[in-house]
Length: 344
Ligand code: COI
Image (cartoon, rainbow, N blue to C red; front, top):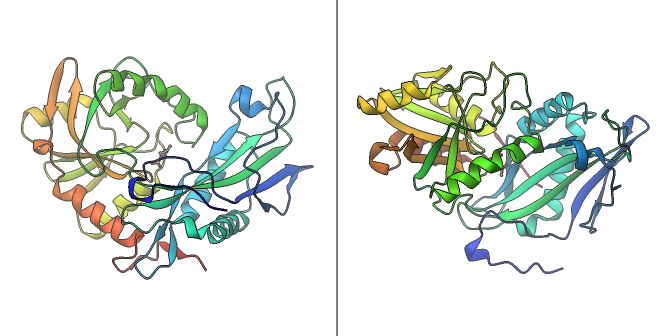
C-alpha cells in the first residue's frame, strides 16, 4: 500500500497508514489483540464514548535515528499514564507489558512510515473507547483499545520559534478534583473555545488559569508550562490533580536537576509572572509536550497589555532542554538515562 505524503512538509496531520492495532474488551478481559487494515471503527451509535466521553488516549512518538533505526521515548511512562486515566474514567486498565508490546508491534509493522528528517517523527496515538450500546450514565462493559499512527512534523507552524500566548480569564480547562490529571478527550473539547478565541485575536494558544482562584497557572494550550524567574526554573505542581503529568515535563525536570539547576514545582500565580516580567526577573517561559517538545513563549497578552519575554527569542534553558531531548530522541546524543526503547 502506498501512502501519498508530502514528506518535505509534514505538519501535525493525520495520514492513514496501512495498519493499526485493535483489541476488544468483553466479559471482564482484553482479547489477544490484532493488526488490521480496516481504518474504520464499527461501534454502536449509543456508545458511551460518543455520548459521555468515556474515552482515554495517549500520545507518544517513534523517532528515526541517524543509523536508520527506530526508537521510542519513555513509552512506559505513557502506558502508566494511560492506565491512570483509565482508573479515573472507570475504564478497565491494560496489562502494561501487553500495552507496551502492542505499541512496539504496530510501530515495527508500520516502521517504513517513520520519517527521516530531523524534527519529524511517527506520532503514536493509543486510545480506548467505551462501546456498550446503552443510554444510562454508568461504566461500559465493553471497550476497544486501538493504536493508530501518523507521520508528523512540527506541532506549531512556528516550530521552535517563540509563540504568542493569550492569558485566558473567562474559561477554564479543568478544575481541582476534575479530570485535568487524566488524558481524557473531554479536557481537550473544553479547551477548544479558548484556542478559538486566541486564534481570532492572533495568538497561538492560551495560558489557562486554575478554576478555583482564577490566578494560578495551569497549562499552556495542550502543554505543561515552565518559567525561569531569576535563574530558578518554576513549574506548576501536580498536587491539585488539574494538571497533566506530562512525560516531557517530567523529563525536563529530571534533566534540569541532573544539571544542578534549581527547579521548583509549586503554585505559580499569573501576578507573580507578570510582576517578574515588569521587574526584569522573568528570564524565560516555555511550554513542554510530546507533540511540540519545547515551545518558547515569546509574548504574553493579558488585559490589553503585551509582555514580551526574552526579546521574543528562545532562551538558554529552553534551548538546552530542546537540544538535549531531541538529541536523545533522534539518537544524536548518547541516552545515558536509558530513556529510549529500540524497535526491532
Ligand atoms: C502533547 O503534546 O503531548 C499533547 O498532548 C498534544 C496532543 C493533544 C496533540
